[in-house]
Image: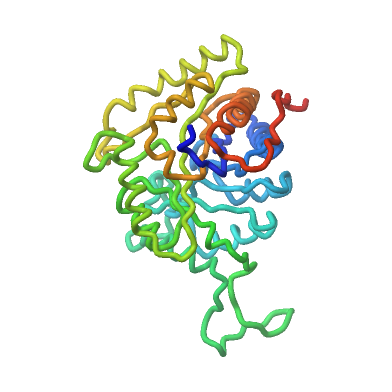
Length: 351
């Protein structure tokens, strides 16, 4: 594993909850963020999900997480910009970043809102036919977060605080350097690099020129690196569904295996008109997981790794998986220069 030089490890959680007890599930997810910070993860990411039993507003959830953590980076993966107004979203995200002390990472994606027709008048104000859902929407968000003054030099607004030059508030210094794009195609990877967005890639991508997932994603990563134009180096976050079960009992191990088996068929061929490719979940002992990661051609090319947690596991399972990854897998990825700060046992959730 010496070829790997991971310096940053994060985790991504789906933020599940039951239909009748959303508060319990959201609280459990906040506790996972606390636990992730406690055992030494560098970042904690929440999936942004619409019309599902999950976090439908990443900014609101992450605002709560800023008050429950103090050091760990916080991220969204990903906010679908087709549902958002760039101006209002910028205000929310800048507020969260200020509350966090500059720990926020914003993962976004472009494209038409998937459920617009279903939502109907709840979403559409009559302008959907002319709305621009392209990458331009992400550029507008970056512009809104830049802190630039609005209007010309003589433009002034008046309020109870007096006359002032207007700009989107609060101003979150450095936040535009923490914008990420969830790329799943050659076009989106190249666009992200040219516009200075960091790159999020995971276990789903588009089959272009090949049916092989790793070949397709490696081409995207290579293109992103060659197209990067900013003076600062890009951040590239590689995500994989990882489920180590070293400290799990036999029954739990079998349940994990059954979960992966139920999702395996989708990995055997491109899916749908967009030729969506899925990477198999990586489940087993830490050594089995490390052996599989050794064959991943992208891992030696990145220094940030994101463990993606499966859907609909209970909190105690997530804690066990997170513990085993941090304690058994992460150290062997070459990810720390400082002394390990991981506990040797899984801490139980408080009652």
